[in-house]
Image (cartoon, rainbow over all chains, first blue to last red; front, side, top):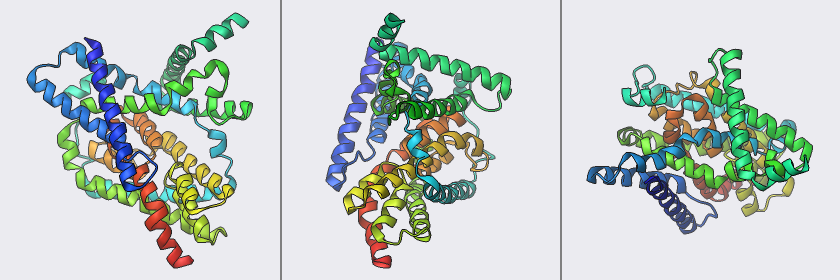
Length: 133
Length: 253
């Protein structure tokens, strides 16, 4: 049943949120520390476990995959709800600080990825390529 | 007309789904006919969303973009943190665990540099621009991390509200920049493999910026970037009011 997959995802999400907030509290910050990453790890683990035992039929998988397919539209909806006016309201100072730190950040990304050096050689496994197309 | 508006408002989430689908379709056409598929339609859709959010903000004077208009209020739910995080988590279903393990160390380095680099540059630029007190420098530097770290740090160390507002603006520019700029700069940043996406996620940090930027570049990269980026805001909130503020205070206080 499709709902089993969606429920599995929902449970991982809730547990991740809970552990993320608990971690934040332990560290003394009012923020969710890595909640989404914890949900992702839980989801990966449960997937491996269920697949090994054969409890992961196509229908169940679809309950999760529907949401990953909805990911881009959701991000588009998110961008339409951003406070863009405020982003542009900081004036010159805001712009200068952002541009300076962004240049720095982009250069560090370039540097780290360059020394890691898998840009030329990395190929996606064939089956994911077909799925994307 | 009144009935139509009533129906659209009552079914706000369904309206948002329909409108988002329409935006995706328009972007698909623009991508195909205007850029001949060179610029991914998702990147165009995200940019389109931001443009709409800008005009909606000017029109309503609200803070939530298009969702401040009653018939589009469903966008707040569809694009809000709850559904967004659920969708991000779901992308992990197709993650290749081997790639994550391989990138563990470099991901951690990226995460730390991702906090230190924007903070230092932000604080230094603030100093050059005349904000010479440690509290303002720290808050502005924290804003250069994300628009959440900025206000949390500023509030914790007692910054004035105009500096906090400025730090939010700086963080928002960062997030908008990565949403729009990542697909364009992907080649320059050597962004192609899962590992490079994890480096990117650690350095860019903003969940929305990373998520949308990678979606516009290659949707297969999203889970890897998100996996690292989701630790960023928490780490920033941890470092900002503590080590970062104390260091700045020790040097400039």
